[in-house]
Amino acid sequence: MFRSRSRPSTNASDSSGESEVWTKISAGIKSLVEYSQQNEETKNSIAKLRLVLNDGDDDDDNHGDEDNGNDNDNDNDNDNDGSINKNKDENADVKDENTADPRILLAKLDELRDLYQAEIETTMSEKRALDQATEDVSILTALRQASESNINESKRKKRKVEEQPPVVDSPKSTPPVKKARSNSLVPMDSPTVGSQVAFRLKKQRGAEAEWIRCEVTKVIGEGAKIRYEVQDPEPDENNNPGQSYKAGPKDIILIPDSAIDLAPFPVGTRVLAQYPETTTFYRAEVIGTKRDGTCRLKFEGEEEVGKETEVERLWVLEAPK
Image 1 (cartoon, helix red, strand yellow):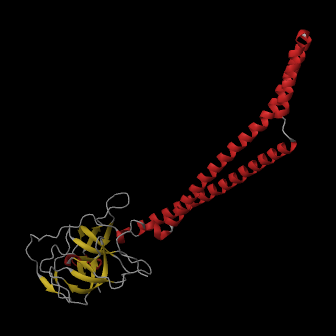
Image 2 (cartoon, rainbow, N blue to C red; image 1 turned 180 degrees about the vertical axis):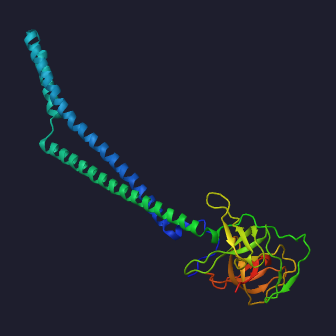
Image 3 (cartoon, rainbow, N blue to C red; image 1 turned 90 degrees about the horizontal axis):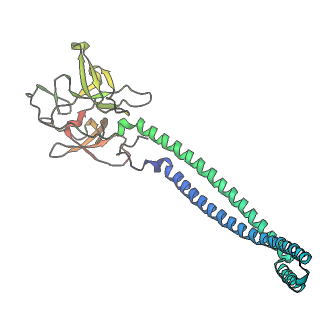
């Protein structure tokens, strides 16, 4: 299946599964917050219950201390027997009130055990959720790296042209022309330094040759031995000047300086055209011409059935054999 030539999507993550993974991560983070809140509530309940149980123990200890103190008072002050007996009775009553029934104590201990068990289970669930979220983040990172790698790999085919060379009338005199098979008027000038050309990249195994727009930076030799050095105007990923290539006459197609005097292509003509918002040329079929000379084309391999694309006449060239 031919690759899409549409403008690069701003939401490319959807096609690579990133959106689905991110949804899982968001859900995992939400569950971590809920587990944390549950644990906090359980810890508070444990603290309150322990406080109740510890208060009972403290009361017993305090009563014991009070008894010892009363004994000391009995030894030191035999004249206060009435007060001492009264204090003993009051302390005994307080101790009886704070001494829990064994069944109540067992129930409290069972409740405390259940709370500890609930805390353990919530902690384990929190750990599993954290492990899953960590794994999902790793998957998302891998998908993002793969997506960026694919974007860089197809950058030439889909990159956006920030500034197209202006279409202006050439100050030069009109060069001699010859009638082409497509009825277009093709300048007989040879490319010179500064000329815009369509350059054929080295064909990859199993793939069709790719043509990109370049600028001639050097002309070497002449006649049958003439060679050219062309440069990709698009900077690389590090914003360095575009790559330079060596080219023979058969590897380049001269792009006219102006669309003036370029005859329209007949319907059905096979051409090589620069796809809008890219610097890459693709094969297409002419299905019509507008009054201003703009070509109506159907690009080969276009995924959208019946899609028509308009391209300025200047960027539509006769297809090489």
